[in-house]
Structure formats: C-alpha cells, structure tokens
Figure 1: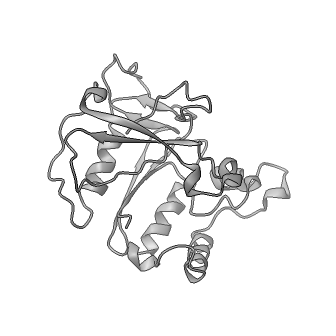
Figure 2: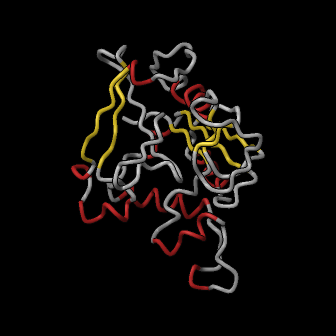
Length: 231
C-alpha cells in the first residue's frame, strides 16, 4: 500500500482530463480569448467528484485509505506555470490526510541544496520553468521529514547528511515501464520506456520504497543520454 505523498507545484487531481485542458489546469484559467478550454478555473469539488467516481468503478482504492496519511504540498507563489497547487492541497485536506501545506516565494522548479561541484549555486529561486535549481533549500529532505518520517510504521528516526558520490553507496537498476501500462498509452501518460530503481548497499531486506515522479525538465531524454535526476 502507498503511504504518504510529497507534491510540489502540481495541479489538482485529474484536472488535465485531456491534453487541451493543460492550460486550464496549470495557469488556472483558459488563454485570453480562447473559449475552447472552458471558462471555469479548476475546482476542488471536481477533483473530489472524479475520485469518488473512480473509487465506485473500482479503478482506484478506497479513499478512506488516505485517512491520517501524511501529505506534503508545496506551492511556489511566483510560479507562472502551475498556479493551482492550492486546489491540490484542498483536495487532500478534504480526504482527512495529515496535510502540511507550504507556500514559498519561489518559481516553478525543484529546489535542491547541493555542493557547487554538482550544480552551480543560484542567488534566486525564481526560475520560471522546471529543472533542479541549487538555491540552498533541500526539497528532498523536506519531503522525507514531512512524509517518510511520519508514515505509520516508519523505521526512519533521523536523517544522515546527503552524499555526492551516490554511485559508491548503491546500485542503479533500469527496468521496462511498459509492462505496467498499455503500450499504446505510453506517450499520453508521459512515461518513458524505462524507469530506474536505486538500491542503497545498506538495504538488505524490508526497506521502504520511495517512488518519485520527476517534474518539468528532469527527464533523462528519450535517447537516455541526459540522466540528471535522482532522488
């Protein structure tokens, strides 16, 4: 069972019903003068109604499983790409999760805290569109502290300092993602043909699994020549 979730700069649940809903669900309104996208901004009621419909059709698990689960939602107030992360937070609040909702005066990206040899340190966190931005804030640590350390039955008591040489501390395995979905829908789901699993050498058995769906500009690329994202 999935326990807990950490989300940053994401839109409401099932808001992007089809590709042409994208702008409505990110900017929160249709483009000026374009009625094709509809006139109403995303609403939490729509997300809740659809989730209940999916549960009734047995396409997702019982929503009561979310009761008491830790959920961390971060919204960048200067984010010009996704302005509706607050609706996402309302969705989880209505499902009785242990919600931590944070607003920061940032743009649209994943904030990291890394050695300058890994990524140049930025003086501003106002990046407009995606990628990892080294602006002295560890988003990964925030998620772990607010989710993994709070899920029922967790064995994590404290966190060690992050390491730069992750290759020496574990192994990275590549696997086919097409086995989990209809291959015809690979493009529409946004899933690459391959996924990656990192296994620390300290993990022998009974280790917690942390699943990460990367954000904008963090893919390895379809030719797999640009692997830049590991959590």
